[in-house]
Structure formats: C-alpha cells, structure tokens
Amino acid sequence: MASQSWTHATLALQLLTVDPGLGGICIRARSGPVRDRLTAMIAANARRLHPAISDEALFGGLDLSATLASGHLVQQNGLLATPGPLVLAMAERATTALAARLAVALDRNDDHCLIALDEGAEPDEVLNPKLAERLAFHVDLSECRLNDAGDAVPVTRTKVALRDVTMPTDIIAQVTRIAVDLGIDSMRAPLFAMRAARAHAALAGNTKVTQDDLEIACALTLAHRATRIPEPETEEEPPAPPPEQNDENKGEDTLDLPDELLLEAVRALLPDNLLEQITARKARAGRGNGTGAARKGNRRGRPLPSRAGRISDGARIDIIGTLRAAAPWQTIRRNASGREGLQIRPADIRIKRFEEKSDRLLIFTVDASGSAALSRLAEAKGAVELLLAQAYARRDHVALVAFRGTEAELLLPPTRSLVQTKRRLAALPGGGGTPLAAGMVTAFDQATQASRRGLTPTIAILTDGRANIALDGRADRKQAATDAQQIARVLRASNVDAIVIDTGNRPEPALRNLAQTLDAAYLPLPRADAERLSKSVAAALAD
Image 1 (tube, rainbow, N blue to C red):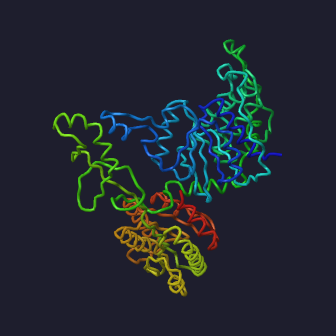
Image 2: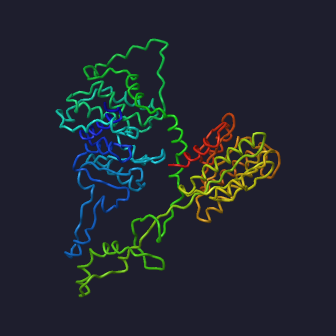
C-alpha cells in the first residue's frame, strides 16, 4: 500500500496538470528510485533547470554563432518562452537572483508551473522561502521507501473543464478563517486552497466543489504553511443560530461545512516536530544563509554575469561576453570602416566577475559571574568544541570572551584549532559581578578586527541577563542596563550579527529587549547543555 506522502505527491502533480495556476510543488527527497518514479509522471515537455542557469538560457538572448555567421542579429528563445512545466533540480541551492526570476515568471501568468526538487540533507538546506510561497504544494518523501511508493499514476484528461466548476459562495471567508487559525499570514494560501478544490472537483468529474474536495485541498495547501497548531474549541454554551439570509442571498449556492472539519483535515498532515521547526524558523529569520558575507572580485569564486569594463591589471576578459556585445554591430562597423574581419571596440569589453564567501567568526561572549558560572562556562566550552569539530566543513572560526567582576577578557583569540581551544579552555575563572556592557565592547572590538581581516563576525551572548556592573566599573544595575543598550545600538549600526542566549531559569525581559535593540535572535535556553547549545546556535545561524 502506498504511503500517505506518496499519495499526496501524485495527487498534487495531477492537480497541477489540471490547473498550472497552482504554481507548482516542492518535493523534498534525495535523488533515488522513489523520486525517479514520481518524476516519471511529469509531462514529457517539461524543461529542466539547474541552480546555476544563466539569464540567457532563461529569457533568451543573442545567438552568437548564428549572428557571426549571417552578419545580422539573430535572437534565440529562452526556456521561459515556451509554456509548460519547469523542473528545478537541487532547488535548495538556487540563488536569490534565480528564485526572484522564477517567482516573477510564476506571478506573471499561468503558463508555467514549477516542480522544485529539494535534495537538502540538513534542516537549513531548503528552497528559497519567497519561491516556496508561490508553490501550492510541498511534499516530503525523505522517509518514503521504494516499497511504500505506489505506481506512477497516469494523468488523464478531466471530464469536466475547470472553468465549469462552481464554488460555493461561503468558501472564501471560511478558508481565510482557517488560514488565520493556522497562523498563515499570506493570502496566497487560501487562494491556492480554493483553486486546488476546484481542480480536485474537475479531476473527479464534478461540476461543483464538495466537502471532500475542500478538505483535501486545505490539507495539501495549508498544512506545510502552518505556524501554530490550533486547539480544538470546547463549547460551553450552545452555538448561536446562524443569521437569517437576506433576500438577495437566497438561492445562492453555499456549503454548510464547520470550520473544525477543515482544521482536522489539516491537523492530520501537520508534522510531529512542527513546534521545533517554527522555533528554528524564527531563530533563523534574517540571519542569512549560514555562511560568511559574499565578496565580489575578478579572480576567483563562483562565476557571476560579466559586466562592461576596461582592461586593467588583474582584470580577466570574458571572451564570449565580449563577442556577444560586439556581434550586433559588425555589419555597421564593416560598412563604416571598409575593412573585413571581426571588429572589437573598447565599449564591447566584458570583464569576468566572481563571488566568494568569506570565513565566519563566531564570538562566544560568556557570562562568567555568579555561582552558576562554572556550569555556564563548562557548557560554553563543550559548545565551542562541538562547533569547532565542524569548522572545516563550515569554514568557521571561533573566539571566546568571558566577562566577570568589573571587566571582560579575551580568553580565546579567533582560531580553528581544536587542540589550542582545549588548552585555553582547560581552566576558566568564575565569580563576581556581571559587566555585560564590558563583554559586549570586547566582543565588538574582536568583530571589528575580524571584519578588517575579511571575516564575517557573529556575536553569541550567553548570559542570564542580570547585569549589575556599569561600563566604568561601578556597581550600578540601572546604569549597567543603559550601557548595554547603548553598546547594542552601536553593534546594530555597525551591521554586526548577534544572537542572545538566555540561560536563566526563566526568560529575562531585559535580555529580550536587548535582542530587539540588536535586531538579533533571542533564544531562551534554561539549563542548556553543550550539545543543545551548539545545535541552537547552528540553527540560528542557518538560513
């Protein structure tokens, strides 16, 4: 018997065939026989895309060889010129630029639908959220085995045209209410649900949307977008009678379906770890893609589209781009000069460009004050060692700043050496007051130096939030909080990323306010051990 995820995946592909206006589907599955069996259902005229596809391949452009051979301008069509489905392999690697171009193509008309094949192995390796929002369906086949996959369902022509399917008048408001109850803030979700209901009715040969059509449509389009789990309402009083219909509404087609039935259909597809996914999603918001900042140059890195430029020291000429720029003018230049052969002008020169990711520096700023200091420092030590174990894969550097008494101290300069880290962390001091502002200043100094060396710094502040030592060393709780807020504004103005980790027994409002000033992720983690701390920081740093 086929698994539920497989059944939903095949049904979604059929609905996309009926109504390409549903945008598409994101299929999360590694390359293998299960995915191959599913993609066999995709239409034969589907065009294949890859994450590094060029603008010329998408939108068309100059046919260089034909132009040079014929002597006049010859244009070639791009993949988006022909209506039909698009298949994007390794969709989790799609750049923001490619995601934006595909999103515009999907918004423009219903000529295309996108099948995004997400092959990500880690939770943070996902399809660009702006592009995913424009796809009605999302199916996870990661746990689906070949024995759980059924046969590829052939897509048959519907007996009823989609335009002939009618929708009850009360559906729009009801589906919108359901989306609000699930914490969905995008209007695309209820619109997709209604389109999917009409497509499912047409697929079943019905001319009117039924209860089954609506339940299936809501489950397929809303479950993966939910940000909260609605609790079933317990009615203490009998519900009020429905309002009387006006004369102008009498005779209209309605579907008297309780909201709870639709919510139950969506709850059945909610993932078991939804709360963990929501927490990681909030922590990752605005934190980038988990790597260092992008730097553009003309020597090395990932190729970018070439740009017009001048020949100078270190510049590398894009020969193909230069020929493309010069080809349309060859006939005019030959007639003007009276000379044969290829003629290149300085304005035709195109310079190669590349983009590389800088290394990232994670600066742990640890509260070493008070009676719980030894416990917190031990957790920080374990977290640093766990993160360093992955430093070579992630290209991370780690530094450690401890603040206690009246000042802060740099215990571990930026390093990727696990041996050196263990030596420096062998014996850490503890006790005394909490000079939070001093710790933030020391971390900021390290971040500034790291930026000058080409690193991308991120400050992780690990504290219980009870700052009581001002920046000048006085024991003044109110001034200590003011100093910390002032330094936080400086950090934010300097565009330094930060994470605030609250290790107190209960969340501290002052730390939440500090995180808001920093524009940083706030992670309340009472009694966090080293493994949980490292995982939380890694999730907050990921995209």
